[in-house]
Length: 265
Ligand code: SIN
Ligand code: MN
View 1: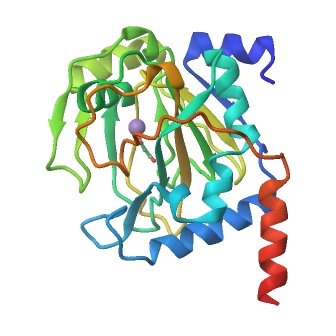
View 2: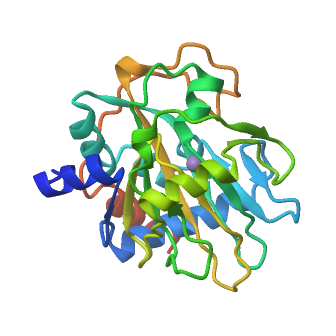
């Protein structure tokens, strides 16, 4: 359960960072799973122009470890607590930000996309992320503009040229004004850290020219009553299975990892 101080931080700043939420053994299972899926040639695995993986969508549907993370109580319960109702999976991505080639994510708000492209009624969906590698100031950490979630949906341009992935991006004047008010934070830390941020929080990340990869898994959990009304994107980008997620036991990922390892021995 999130404490009162954590809830206050989330409501005021628009994000919450909880270091060391997943144990090294749990993260090792997920990191291996990420390396596996990035080798697959399938439409859900999106690549940078260099050919390096950028993001793997819907990994919970074709990889058992990511399936378990998608139902993990440490992911589901905080979001249920914040929304006061059950949640379903709106989107699932495993972002690579590969060493040397990981490309930029321009400044944007996610709810802008969910509203415009998916017909999501309210910003009652949440990104909840787990660091699979160490996130450092130098390897393209996710940057957040604190308190920008209070601005509602900002005007945005549909950028289909800068990177391989189309995004509704914000202009420089808008970002400058919000940053003058709230600054920029880039939560960093060891694998296993958990970051939760509001759908309207402005965020982005720079490229990664270091030898250190920066993999982060993002679940977007939507309140069941806030299901999307007018989907336009592929099902594997914006899901239309609105069934509430039933969380697993807390040790489900570890038990699965152990079973898997024994079977391979
Ligand atoms: C995102 O905004 O969806 C991803 C950004 C990142 O992984 O750096
Ligand atoms: Mn985003």
